[in-house]
Length: 284
Ligand SMILES: N[C@@H](CCC[C@H](N)C(=O)O)C(=O)O
Image (cartoon, rainbow, N blue to C red):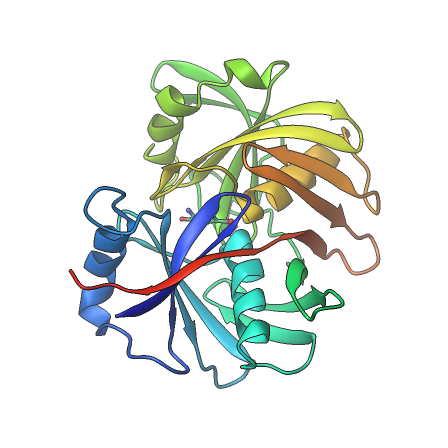
């Protein structure tokens, strides 16, 4: 099986090219994601991403976490898919559309003088804020903004945002003390979130700068989460800590993302790097 490994700020996936190469059968996809992600017996990654032809968009992306579950969106994946399809000539324009299970997005690659793509901007669309959008328990029509929620004997102040996939954001005064590995999995699997949830802690540095850590649904601690960074900036605006139209620098463990929530059309814009690690043939 031919593959390419790419990462966005250390959030790495094994990418399979459905335009040019064979893809495992539908029923083999979850176990392939688990196998290739394993750092000891596989290639090592946070999951598996398929780059596929689309009927209505230029490209289609499917995302599998490293536990084999399929996700509806992936911000770092969108930037890496964008780099891949432009580098390989699958698209020839610098702007194009990508279909995901969470909706269609528009991407723009920024090739340098040597036609190398290092930075990518993605219009991530309108964040969805209703409880039913994540989904989570409670009145589906309501939003979750700094709401006190009890999970496993702990009380959390949570803000819920869907960027096509579900995120719950909590603010902290000290990101180094965020209980990511201990409480992240408890929140992810809580019955409050029937489909699970990506769990993020944010420390505001200023209105335009934040520190960020994540426990990803289906993958655990990762170096970065693009949809999570977008959701965190939306949560900061909803809580009066940032402003619409002002770019926020999000410091993730793996590097920085630049996120703006536009008041013009309510869309969230994400800008950041995408890197090719290696190409290879998986034999196991
Ligand atoms: N790393 C991603 C998100 C991947 C999917 C997520 N774990 C989910 O299950 O929703 C990103 O960069 O957005």
